[in-house]
Length: 207
Image (cartoon, rainbow, N blue to C red):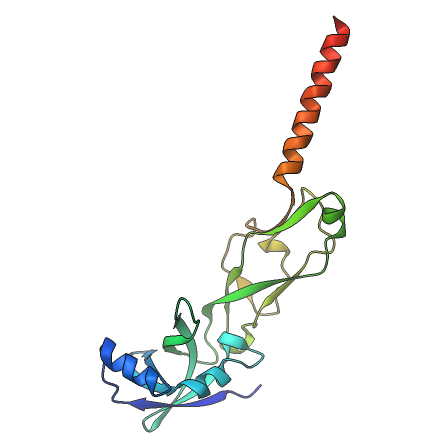
């Protein structure tokens, strides 16, 4: 997939008031940094940035960012969003090389239907929603898909079980639980009461 091209305007005035004015004009304040480059305040067109981050690669898309007269290969980092509207407020761009290993956060997506869990009245509980991985920029996946079709009550899927693409390694302990088949608390409590009643009944018969 070709790199997505973006143009950054240099000479951005800093400060909260200036940032608000830029957003009102349809622009996003940003910073470019990395590989010995001092953090450089820039401005990005909001619509172009949304398009760039809406490709199949998602937030981990490789971007060809034109800054002044120079071209930089970057990844979008630290995307700050409005807590209610979800709109982008600020973004950091990290300069990278195609051949370097970098660390990135990748979302975990659950697929399939855990029929055995549902049949037992249980639930599928996702405990890890993002996975920290290490890979060269072009190998970073847009998401890690986990099939829970074979999950049973009491069983789990761990980081070590995840189907990572070639060249991608997890930066999280392999024993970390991603998904678990759990019994509903109410059902577990009910089962406990039934066991107690059964035990009490057995003791009464012995007397």
